[in-house]
Amino acid sequence: MNIGIPSFLRRIGLRATLIGFHYLAYALSLVLQDETYLLQLTTRLYPEVAERFAVSPSNVERCLRTAINAFWDRGNVRLLEELLGYRIPDKPYAGEFIDILAGYLRSPRFSAEA
Figure 1 (cartoon, rainbow, N blue to C red):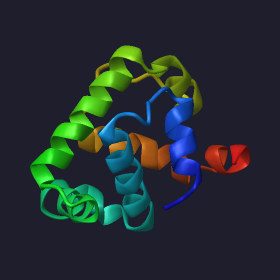
Figure 2 (figure 1 turned 135 degrees about the vertical axis):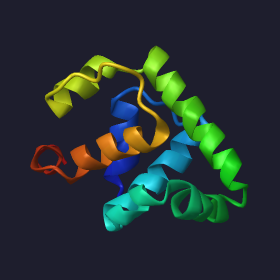
Figure 3 (figure 1 turned 90 degrees about the vertical axis):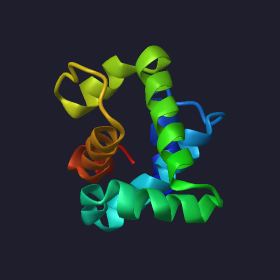
Figure 4 (figure 1 turned 30 degrees about the vertical axis):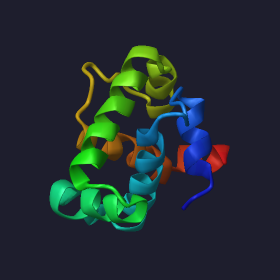
């Protein structure tokens, strides 16, 4: 897993005390290696994360939703929007959130910070 992913997640206000934090970090590392995971969340991404952590795919999905809800309620949405360079008008679904974060982590802006 890319060492910068957990640091980035903490920076935007996600807490590592959430199980979904760890699932999200691993999911992001997979998506950064192969973007097609975004096309197969429930059939490929969630099952692979579930296998890694010895849980069910539905548990992965639920924990990701919990982490996103916690981020949206208590995280630094404004900082994420500043880093992205655009506003996020509504709380994203899990796949959208993973896509948003992966897009930023792939960007030259993130590479310049790391």
